Image (cartoon, rainbow, N blue to C red):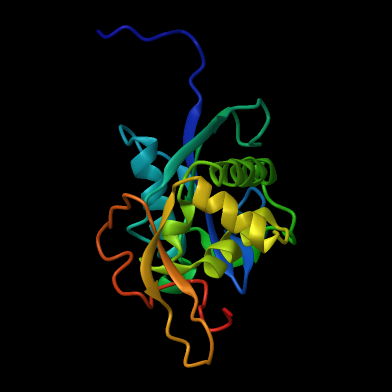
Length: 237
């Protein structure tokens, strides 16, 4: 007979904090809970792990079941285990985070979610459980990653203008950045390169230069074509 520890065993859940940019504002994906606890309240997508199911697989399943989103690369964020975080008992959550092009997905709420929608991070409704804390932690991690990671690669086309890249950073940070300082910092950071081409706008005068991320690998068809960007180039100077 296998040995069984006499210690209490918590339930394990997996939650997904998925960000996107809508009209130059950072949004997070929320679902409206259909059942108790917190029926009718908003929360991040997620749910209980099945027996022998890793949290990394559970979060993808729950995201698909509750929002219809599939094929998203989710990074493990943090484990949330504060006692009392779930009124159903001792429940530990492994949170995951992603930044995607929301324009390329179709939300379809199902399973135990009554609705699914994108909500601005600066105007969130009251959230169930400790999900406000989880979203806040994920947002801070996302902002910190701007210093060393090409997170804009999830939103921008293969070639992009400096203005489009700045809009991504401004949306994530929630503030306006100085144009000259931003361009200098980006070029000195050696994370982007000048492609030697320009964006054809049809306007007179110098055309905006196009840049690309350094050593950027293309995953699947996520970046196929220069038109699949969440930040429009039409308003760029």
